[in-house]
Image 1 (cartoon, rainbow, N blue to C red):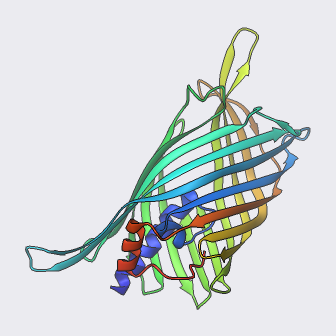
Image 2 (cartoon, rainbow, N blue to C red; image 1 turned 90 degrees about the vertical axis):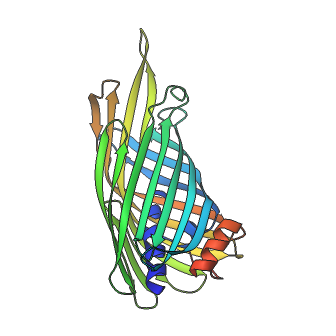
Image 3 (cartoon, rainbow, N blue to C red; image 1 turned 135 degrees about the vertical axis):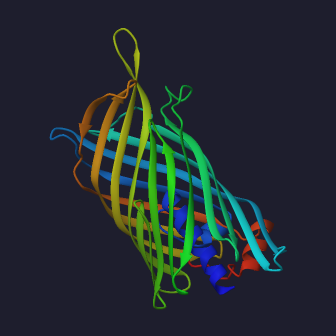
Length: 326
């Protein structure tokens, strides 16, 4: 039973947080929550004559939609304990790039996305994590003629002792073109206060648990956006697409307050930045590499364990506890 719980906990923690969270945390995955977040990158030189900056604000909601624990008996007269947990992820972001202090595009990009993550575990079949989602990133002018993106994937977990787990699988994603991405994850406890987690090639994290209500994350992650916009030409309006990517490395201080509120403050640097612009034929029109720059971020999360689905699942699997440390 201990192996089963460890398998369940760590695979879900690694798989979801790489895509949706600034740092890994168990309670965020098994309890309904609403996260409000914002980050700001200091403008830095884009091409030697212009500065590029970006601000991101938004929210993420995690909504449990199905949780179940079953005890089965096979024809081979073997017992099997099976658990499933399914959550819906709903996200909205407002992304505002600037060039020399001017909003470009004027009203920024809006990202809307919906996804589903399903965790399926049993003593017999071990653990699998399945997920999929779709969304779009557009400006006001292209919002009703979007280029959607989607993703789907699966991962398998293996146990290497009680404090070490590895995960491997693959993700299939489409955003202008189809990509197949193999993923590898590891989750390892180091003593009473440290835990190291990674889901490559997306994120890596080291967490230090100082007290029951305060912890610190040292993190690195790949992120960005791909958004459609429109420019006015003399004869007609032309559709364009801007791709931006970066690697963020930083430190996050996280305080869990008043049972249901978590506050996080984050700071670090954004590096290996790249901006590319494409036309409707996917031809590369421009390419820039903005300089490394500092960034700051903050988030506030409201967490509740009152959901019957989540409470039932976490109680039966031994995952729920008081004084959740994010």
